[in-house]
Structure formats: C-alpha cells, structure tokens
Image (cartoon, rainbow, N blue to C red):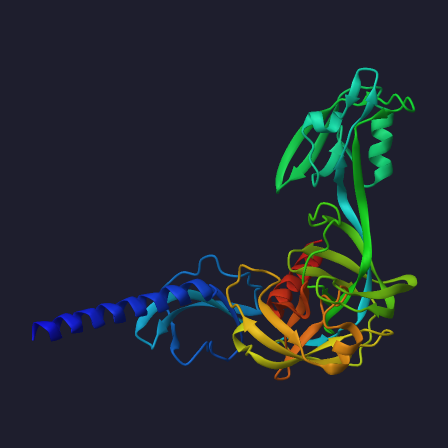
Length: 410
C-alpha cells in the first residue's frame, strides 16, 4: 500500500511539473499583443482557450487609432482551466492589401551623417586621430557640428577644413543616446589641410522588393528588415528618400556559403514614391504611382498562420513578379525577434533552378497562405539558400500605419 502511495505521489509530482512546464512554455512563446479582424475571436489552439476579461484596464497595449479599432483584455487558459497569461487583443477592420513582389529602387539620405571609419594621419606632432581622441566611434550618427546641421560629406568636410584648428562641438547619437564631444582638428602633414580623421556616409542606394501596397492610402511596405550601413551594420537614420523603378536583369545563383543576388538597375531616375520610415521591421513610404497585376487580399494575422504549403511573389527577371511555391517550416509567435518570425523553404523547382532559392534583393517578397498575406521574406540561410527567415505581415502592417499617423501630424 505504501508503495502504491509513493508511486502515486511521484506520478502526481511529474504531472504537476509537466503542467508547469507547459504553462511556462506558452507564457514565453505566446506574444502579449494580438490583432484580430472585427467581429472575430482569437483562436490559438485546441488546448488554449481565450477568456474575455472585464474590469481590467488596458496597459502597454498596441497603438489604437480612434474610430478604427479597439483594444480588449483576455486571459489565455490551458484547457480552459489553468491560467497562462493576460493579453491585449486589438480589433481592426480587415485590411485589404495588394501583395506585390515587385522590385524597387531605394535612394536614401540619412538624417545627419554616420561615422563609418575613424582613422589617423601624420601631423607635425606625430600620428594623430582627433576624432578618436574625442571619443567618436564607428556607427555614431553625427547630427550637428558647432550647432550647424550636417547632411552630407561636403557639409562636415567644409566645417573641419575651415576650423583653423579650433575645437568643434559634435552633437551625435549613439545607441539612442545623445552625446556632445569636442574634436580639435589637426593639420595634416601631407596636404596642409585641417582634418579630424573621420570618414562619414550620408546616403545609400540599392534594390529590394515591395511587400504590399494599400490602394486606399498609397502606403507601401518593403524589405521586412532595415536598410543598414554596409560598414557599421547600424540602421541608417532616414532624413528623406525616393523610390524609383527597377528592372531585374539577371540573378547570381545562390549556393551554400555564397548567397546569391538579384542583378538589377534603375530603369528611370524619376521618383515614383517617397521613403518615410526605415526601422527594424522594414522600409515604408508612399507611392505616387503604382500598378500591379495582383488583386488585394486580406491581411493574415500571425495566429492564423500554419506550418505547411504557401507561396511567394517575387521577381527574378524583368519588372513583374511570379508566384513560387514554398513551405513554412516553423512559426515563432513571440513578438521579440523582429524579422525572423518564421522559417521558410523554397520548394518550387523553377525558382530553385533559376536562383538556388532565396537571394539578396528578394527581401520583402510577400508570402501568401490560404488566400491571405501572412508575411514577407527577410533573410537567407547562408549555408542553405533554399531556406530563409520571414517576418509576420501584421507586424509590417502596424509599422505602415505609423506612416499615415506621421503624415497626418505633419
């Protein structure tokens, strides 16, 4: 009898530990905020029930635009009994978006200049680096020098060369913190000019893929990841930018250890849109003119996505996208990983033959599943170009709404 009691106690402890493990797991992987379309209910799985909460104030909820959506609290419960966590649910009118896959050209000017290299040079007193001595580091974003806004390489070069060696006050941003550093330019022995030992960049250009276009507002989303400086890896602070037409002339096929690349060129210098936001979740702006062969589809929420078959729109030749088959292999519902929410694999024989899978320039290619826009391609697996990461479409849609609010406030 004692043996039976002991075994029963052990089994109960194992069961309790297992349940606690499941609760901790779901509490960790499930996000705190959800979008649902108006009139629908949040459904996550057969073992998790969503119980509406009443009398609990909404805190740290996702942004709400008056008249368009509402935020409610709900409790997630295991088997409808065991509490997991309380979440925010935002109801939105079902957005209808045009999934694109079209290539687009990016011409971006930074807000300030970004330090891409801090170096030294020979002076009468030896090898010096005034910028390094002052504490300037690679990746710093220089906003003003002696109170003057700097927007180009020429701006900062002119101020330094005309300084006469007097100390200059550099106002800069580093890791979202504002710093003021004093730089004392030195005479370069080689040419007799004043220098700071600082190389900066003020612009960037390239190509990417448009994820979606909102026909009601003209707002578009692309890339699914930020435009970063090629040397520092820092997100380029956007001052202004243009979108231009691009034609894909060919594709450098990807292979293990050697990512491929779309080979394209600007087909026109005339702007077809403006860039308004460069953030961790993509590049966003407004199109002044845009045409697509695709029809608008509903936005798919992250909880609606399933592992299994899907397809992407992407362009590997010319200007018009084609549809290619993929498989969504893994979904991470937690909302802290930005552009790596899903793992996808290209299964389409035609695309694998042409490109080897995912290549640079395809970032932003929209993912369609069950007739809805659910995500966008963001990164390729370097050692397996048939596989890559993707971002949730509802994350990109939330970012695109910021463009409208910014434009409205301007």
